[in-house]
Length: 259
Ligand SMILES: Nc1ncnc2c1ncn2[C@@H]1O[C@H](COP(=O)(O)OP(=O)(O)OP(=O)(O)O)[C@@H](O)[C@H]1O
Image 1 (cartoon, rainbow, N blue to C red):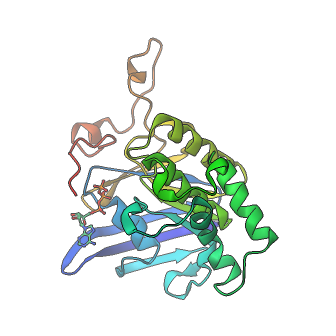
Image 2: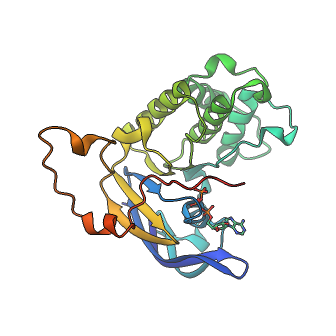
């Protein structure tokens, strides 16, 4: 079953076109990584899929429905790049994760047993159940990122969309995070995520899509871990050697991040 279908899509901000002629298809149960250099358009791509950036040309279907008519947003869990902990809202970890249930239970109905169970299960999945009553502001950056993932998981979505979930996250949090995503995928969930490095998520990724200057430059199985090509007995013939020479394959972006 098709979960995301993007056809010849163009999108951008104000007068500036960022994405051009993007075609991408994600089917149920797939785990797809979006890779590429800083500023290539990775975040814009997933934000356009989610309807946060308007489509200029082409089409997007979500779960077989044209995006403009799609209403089942509770089927999608979105983890943006940052929590914005400096927002000044003194919420506890449990409250933030509970907010992930709103689309399911409705704004004016108090949380029921199923809601509380989903919140606890999601926090358990990311290894933060013992912090349920703590203010989010007292958590490390990596733990706050895990709280956001728990919030998305609590809504029991069919599709998880994550924007660089492991950026600046310590090793322990990355492992906890990889375990949570592995469980989600094992239960049949579909994942689309922007990554800078595959890291501990490498075994989970079924397909990588490389964005270069607003276009999909390459699509296929994820690259081997660094150094693998140098291993004795390695006889893998790289099918995209020419593209690599031409500098199209930018698996590991080198530019510095500017905010
Ligand atoms: N809200 C916005 N308004 C205007 N331009 C934007 C906006 N967000 C991103 N851009 C521009 O769109 C281009 C692509 O940005 P995008 O964030 O999609 O890239 P990215 O590949 O996700 O980069 P990074 O790896 O740094 O997160 C950049 O030139 C950026 O300056």
